[in-house]
Image (cartoon, rainbow over all chains, first blue to last red; front, side, top):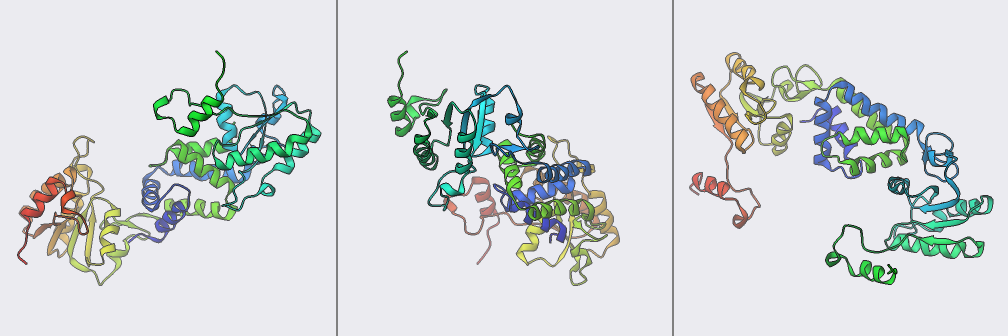
Amino acid sequence: MFSGALQDLVDELASLPGVGPKGASRIAFHVLNAPAEDVQRLIDALGAVKQKVHFCERCFNIAEQARCAVCQDPRRDQGLICVVEEPKDVLAIERTREYRGLYHVLGGAISPIRGIGPDDLRIRELLARLGAEPVTEVILATDPNIEGEATATYLARALRSLDVPVTRLASGLPVGGDLEYADEVTLSRALEGRRTV
Amino acid sequence: MFSGALQDLVDELASLPGVGPKGASRIAFHVLNAPAEDVQRLIDALGAVKQKVHFCERCFNIAEQARCAVCQDPRRDQGLICVVEEPKDVLAIERTREYRGLYHVLGGAISPIRGIGPDDLRIRELLARLGAEPVTEVILATDPNIEGEATATYLARALRSLDVPVTRLASGLPVGGDLEYADEVTLSRALEGRRTV
């Protein structure tokens, strides 16, 4: 017989993504046994995210001020805009330490099945930036899946008239992977995009 | 580039059991996008568990008052004590709606590998209860694994001199299971414990 407060916590935890009922009760018992300071740190971190973090007014990356850390950095190349679906994609690209331009976070991808159309994404805001900023190249870095590809195709068409070079991330074999295990689509993309060495 | 507050939350979440770095960042983004009321409910539930929930003074089940809901219920059979490892085992037995006695939660099982000996469990408290309460049967319901069996064997020996009947949960084939897929140990236990029909 769970006590009311513990069951409430299990219910709240089970509503988080990727946490099932068993995981929720495991976490709840961990919280019950954990030092009060540890739990307070988690509580504070949850509160801080809701209070402090919002979206950058320019690129819609996550930010604690009006603009995100990337937009605030004057050393970034102001002519490059890399268009991604989500803030976590910004993080993935930042981890490469290869890209020195700006971002534009769409907030998702076009998905008829989930009822997400171009108007639900921040495409209008991207077009406004292309009108106002000295952009020399737009890099489409949506996910290499059906929805990401559809979004990239839509954007490529929408940007055609603006006379700014538009590029797409290369598809091909993942580095460190095994040719034998590559799926056919990836392998044909790799063939298609072959380069002289 | 994660903002400080979001990264703090990811770090806190990743320290919970069963939540890896990917799961933590997924939950953190969920928190970022979730309505403030939902996140506040989670914060309140975490705080309430730490403030309100502790262990029953008699059986060490979780409780919001001095005694747990089971110990407070006068309709429970005061002569039966079911000995389990953890409060979640109490919940599992309560779900069967078959058991109407009391519990005693040991707080773990004997495990030389993890350095847990009999003195680290609430065995002394169990012996004290057997001296003070009108107990007619002790049911050993520790887990059917090596550590649980070792604990049950230890308890059976420790209780032998007290002249109170001690029983152990039956081992055998799980109901709804497939004989073909049962492991050898379970199958030999099922044979050993066969009953006339």
